[in-house]
Image (cartoon, rainbow, N blue to C red; front, top):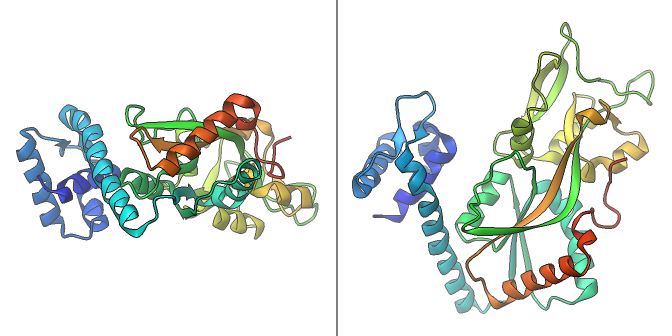
Length: 321
């Protein structure tokens, strides 16, 4: 078995399409398909059902998926730890974070922790969309992942291999620019109108917010009229489009609370449209570097000493209400 086969397998799981998965892996589709067949031959079982529009895992594929994820993660983790030792960087704490939280949450959260106890470690933060952050974690390129979470939204981190702690709460809130004739009202109002659907600024499928909105079915129903006009995976881009009056966007309150206070944005609907979400930190169950383990122990001690610190946004961050 080759490492490429594992990466190909997980790429096809993610994209559910041979052409898109091959493009993501930067290989031709015939070469990609051949490597998938070689993996299936090595395992002695078909992993994908190719008879549907979207390529789906067979029962054997479902069984193999967590093993493939764990094997790949352990291989990359071993590589990163070996490199860290060679480079003398075993004290570095490596975080992956979705874009919005890297701006609104991470700096204040880290400041609060360091105010209690200096870390004595170099901190490395890489931001990406949720799919990219998941890849970094599965490939051992990050020790911790900071992201939003909703109970109805599936994640790639199986509890057998990953653990998490909730650090705070946030809320997805529908917003738009204020009305031109009355800045106290939104320019676009939910649920929209059958004859004139509200323009919708959407998160892409690779974003964590997009997955949350899809899994909660917040935008579905016979009485919701939205017309997608723009898609992006970065919350700050969608927020800027909303400020420019281009449509309605569901934004994390931690990102747009000040805009609401200043009247730059207005709520496009009442609290019935809000989606409460958690701010969560993931890590692998497998033992990490001494610095990473010490940091995790510090987080657990903070949560045990004051559980309330894990249920609210850091001081100064946006809140609902």
